[in-house]
Length: 409
Image 1 (cartoon, rainbow, N blue to C red):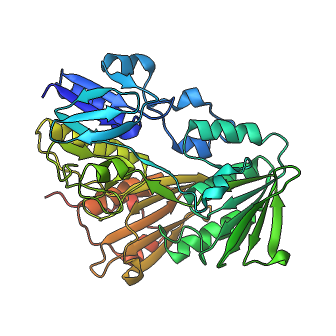
Image 2: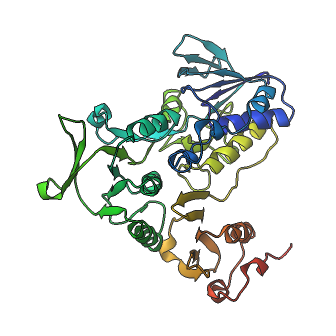
């Protein structure tokens, strides 16, 4: 193997390159990114950056000299237009033709825009990258009221950050609860109470929504269910309406795809010389895409090891986190079929809850922990050990959960 090409220049891409070099690969690595920026953390954009606690330069995954040592050829902003799987070349919009022995698709995701016309409104924005972040910061000058469409993680994180900046925020979610696709009803209720306690307005359960741009000042009116009485005017509207998985280059190339690109436990696609990692890759165990930086990082590592025939499988437990106000919310495991699980709720001295979901064998399937990193670390060990747990012990505040350790084999 003399040439590795990576499409995408985010978390998965740089960790693939770093792992290849760490494991002894000395051939060419070409990374192709379609942004002006490369190799940066995205989660802080809706949190620390929006709050003014971090700048864009601080988002770099590795320092510049560490990236230089990897001896990467970085092409940006460049877009891959075609993969020729027979000749093993990729083609770009600036007429480059690049040969590969192994190829990684790490194209991630982008903001989903439900109505195409909304993209033309100057005061409707989304937040997925540094360019979006800069535009939002520019437009926030003098803004008093912001509407957020979508009660998922991006929408709620931005709502929390803007509320802390003394901006009046209203969140619109068509579903009957927040983050309905990724958390249980109990956690949705917790999130609702958290935001309402900080003054954020939440509107749930409606069938139709319109965004109408004013002609005089480019403000945006949000109207739900075609009801003039249920409408409000905002200086700025942010779309947190989900993610579009950037699987198109995989589809065009004839790879097996579904909602994303299908990979096995080695991040290998239906073409043995093409791999996929990060948001665009369907988790081999769960059957759907996982949008988290830890998944992108760790799949990138596994893809690199697979290219080198090291035979390391991807078996990470899904984990993601969110910072909202003074709460760190960590989620471990999958919410699939948790309606059949036993719920155990434990609160600490500051009334921060942990939600444990146990299957019929009392094994932990899913955990949501508020301000409790230690429990998350211990829960990972319980899950990996496939360990049965005592519900009463989990709930009892006098029981030290750190002492519930998996037995050594």
